[in-house]
Image (cartoon, rainbow, N blue to C red; front, side):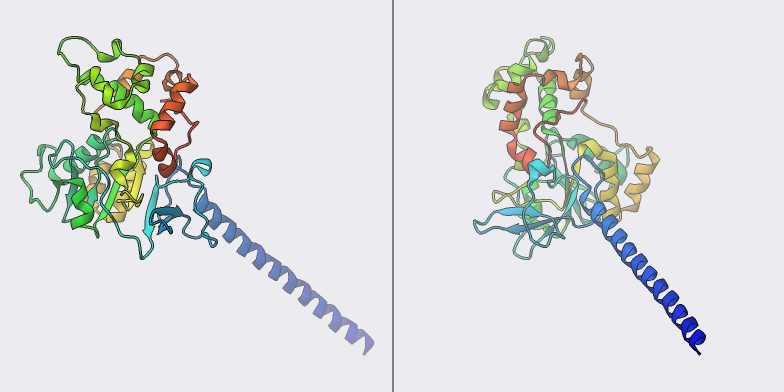
Length: 340
């Protein structure tokens, strides 16, 4: 009997040990899932591939302005956008019930060159930020929906794609999926500088940038740059002027990044479920070619790349001072000058 009891106790102990092991394995599995989920949700910054979910929540503060905070952060503490390098760029937007989509502070015209575009058929709108891949984006949208030989979409129904004054999007079509593309302010500033070569005061006088240095361009007040070029001063506006209301509420639902243009464009197309556009993107090799290449062409002549042009702390600080809101809200780091 004693031996039987001992055998029984031994079996119970084995069963208990197995149960403990299984419990710990289950706890470990849950922990692993939690860890992977946390990394998946929070590892994405402005330089990484965007997570396809509503990961930038927006709410109103007591003073009536909008602020961004992580959707699944329980304490609701706002992002420290600059230090954490987490902003709206590369993220979908989810608004609290008291936050409406509002018109941006500034918008382009109503013609193709500077206007935003909208598709009533696919229920989306694109906000054109000057000097941030706007021409390339609209060229892609036009070719994918209207055909490569229809430069102003005249041969298709206007509901497919048409230009629209940017501020009208939020007023007339707040339910449309609205997107845009942001750009590193350091790169964008150099693109502005390079574009002067296309807008000299007198034709045949050579490149403007041959006589005006990048440092001189940066340190000159935007309103006084018309002494160098006849390029419209609207190109110098902050990106946030094109994409945020006066209350700093986003006028978009997703903000892609020029640095990851092809990847973010595919995310956008999959979200709006536009198969014809996805097929067109695949047909051109998944890469959207730039239209205006002032900056890239000019950078080829720089010894040391773009970072060489920003070797002076005074120049870097000046750009940060002018476009501080872009750095903060989009999520670009003040000290991070790209190499190209």
